[in-house]
Every structure is written in C-alpha cells, then in structure tokens.
Length: 464
Image (tube, rainbow, N blue to C red; front, side, top):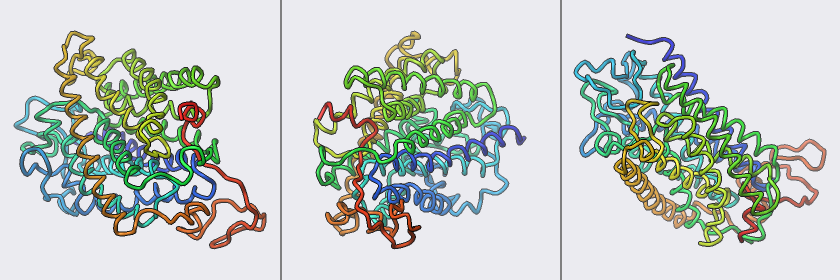
C-alpha cells in the first residue's frame, strides 16, 4: 500500500538535498578569488545537468538494479527509467522477505520514482564536493568530462555497494556487498558520498598540481558572507540528506533530524576551540567549516546513535577536521578548499565512530558499538568499508584525472590562472568594478587586488 505521508517526505527531502548543491556553490564560491568565483559556481552547477541525465540513462540501474554478481554492480533493467512507472519500493512489497535488512522500516511502500529522485540528488552533490580540491585551476569542459566519467566508473558502483539492499526494490532483488555481505552501516552516505569525494579530491589535487604561488601566495577568501550563506544552505538541506534517509515520516527520521542538529552545533564549537588555541581568535570561516565538518561526520551515524553520541561525534569531528586541514602543508598537496580535511577526515570520523557510539536503543536494525557492550566487531566492518571505498576512489580518480590532463583538457594555462579563469573560461566576470554595468565579455578596466583562500586561512597559515 502506498503511503502518501512518506512519499511527500521523501520528495521534500529530495528537494532539500538538491538545494545543497547551489549551497555548496556559494560555500566554495566565497572562498576563491573574485576573478574565479563564476568558474567555481559553474563547476557545481554543471553537476546538476550532467549527473541528472546520466542517472536517467544508466546511473540508477547501475546503482540499484539487481546485482550482476558479487555485490559489485547492478544490471541494466532500469536503463532509461522506462520500466519504473507504477513500481513501488520498500520492504512491504517484498512478500517473501520477513526480516528487513536496512534501517528504513517504513510500514508502507514508496513510489519507486520518489526513491529514484531522492538518490539522484546524492549522486549530484558527490562530484560537486570534489570541485573544491582543484579550485582556481581547472578547465570547465575538462571538469565536465571528469564528472561524467567519474560518476559512471566510481560513484554508481560505490552507491550499489553501500545503498542497494536486498529485497528493497523487489522481493527478490539483490544489492551491494557492503550493505548486505559486510553489513557495514552507513545511514546517509559517509562512505559513498564523503569518503568517496574526499579521496577523489586528494587524487585530483595531486594530478592537477599546485596553484601558482601556493602555499603563501594564494591569498584569502573574496566573500566571507557567501561562505556563511553557503554553510547555512548546506545545513538546511542536510536535513533532507539525513532525516530523509529514513525514507519515512517516522520516529527514525526525527532522530536523524535531531542528531544532525546537535552534532553540527557541537562541531562548530569543536572547530572554534581549536582555532582559538591555534591562532587566538575564532573566525567566521572557522564556524562555517566546523558546521560542514559536523554535518559530514554525523551523516553515516545519524540513524544509529543517540543525541549524546551525536554531540560527541560532532565535537570530535570539529576538532579533528580543524587540525587535519594542515595536512596538505605537511604532505605538499594543494587541496584548495579543504575537501580532504573536511570531507575525507569527517567522513572517516563518522563512519568509524558508529563502532563506538552505535546503539540499538535508537535503531533496532543498527548495532551496539563498543561503548554499549557490542565489542569491536562492528568497528572492523566500518574500517574495512571505509578503506575499500577510499582506495577504490583514489586510484580510479587518479587514473581518470591523469588521462584527461594528458589529453590537455584539464588544467588552465599559467596565464589564465593568474589573470582569472572566469574571463578565460566563461567570458564573464562576477563583479562590475567600473560601475558601467558590465556584461558578457566586458571585464573590469580597473585592476582590483583579489585573493583566494581556504575555509580556515589563519589556522592553516599558522601550520604552514
């Protein structure tokens, strides 16, 4: 039986997650130079177009089609979504399935199209997250090609591993190995989204190389209000990301909503405390970055831990991510906007801490972690899932990026990087400094000193 309330909630959640990609564009866009902001916005916006089409053609079926062997990839029964209409998803439709295997215990079914659209938004924002690692130096069409290849080879298979559960699409459907064989827990995408994107960001930053003048000559964010606006939009949309992953308007959704709120709040405090200790002042960039770190860390755990566990995860993630952003200076990779320090590290923190803070008192389909008498078994499963996704994403991203770079299609010229890639790549500028109106192909005639930076420039410079 179709549940109208659950269907409405999932569709609203899909819209909230869609809003996260423009929010991410503002978050990243505020941190780059004034003459690179349009390129950054476009790198995020194009993901909506590219992934939306590919998801319809073959992405959904690769991720959620019946497994073709070993839990690695779905079949092509749903290619083009031509066989989706009228179908329902949910364990209530699985007549032969008496024990749900997933933390989505809604009593009634969803239209499969609602689930298709909800998962599409996850597929869109994941490659968009990677863009921050290569800000200020990527060709737009090279990036667009990368997004198309990357989601096909990396994201769609990993989504199958993590999100495709036996018996969810149909009574006899078989899903991915992490979800059903390993049984590692990931409520809303700590592995499939954040560890995946963070590892890819690291690989791509290495392939494209450092910006001119890095680490001392790349400046500061050009529009801090944009950064805070983007973080706020991300926080708002993240309720769809996490609470929507209950796939029902129920108690579990409310728990995930609560945990998302308190973990993010705690992470802001954790980041700012580290910032105060390291540089002597709390910054707006630090607060925004701390919020995102908390959102990332609670994502895999939102439906498996108590609010007190969520606060602990948030504090730990905020502090560790604030410290982790300095790793790029130690190891010499130019991760422009701290995708590695926030998304890879935050995703690892949240995924692993399920093994400590998970409790079946919140979700009977979860596990009891070490602090609730469950031992170390689940921690091992979480670590294995994280390690495999990290390694798979890093290696394949490195290869994809290297090939596109060798073909001459990825990094802008040194001249364009210095002068500004908005004009070079898009024939536009974000701001009219002349006061004469501006327009397509009309750059400012007044030299303006602009700058770029990361989500916690002062904290980073103290470690450089």
